[in-house]
Length: 120
Image (cartoon, rainbow, N blue to C red; front, side, top):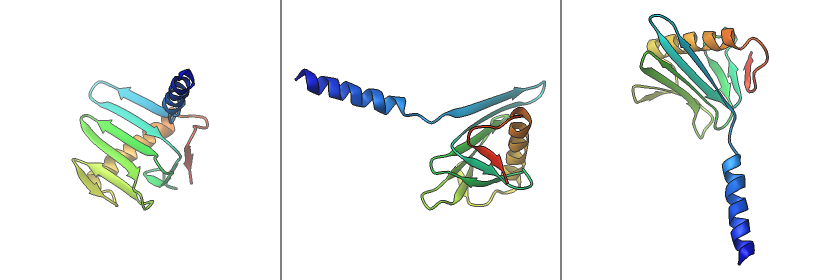
């Protein structure tokens, strides 16, 4: 019986220890607050204004002055952009503006190699 409890405890320890490393960047200047969080393998577009590819379960979120943009991959491998509860496969002007600023911040803040990030 003790073996069952040990195995159950070991299972939960392994389950809880399997987490994805993620990065958080916060920029707070006089007039603007931006919080960027990302995890997984993310490849930026060649012009460094967007996301070209994402690994399964990767995500990229940007909260800019209360506007939260979430970028993730769906089950079919397509990149999905979510802003104001709208889901699109191609960013509109507002989403693209937030994403371009966020990618610029990440590229500026991360001077060396970053786990999971790359440019084309």
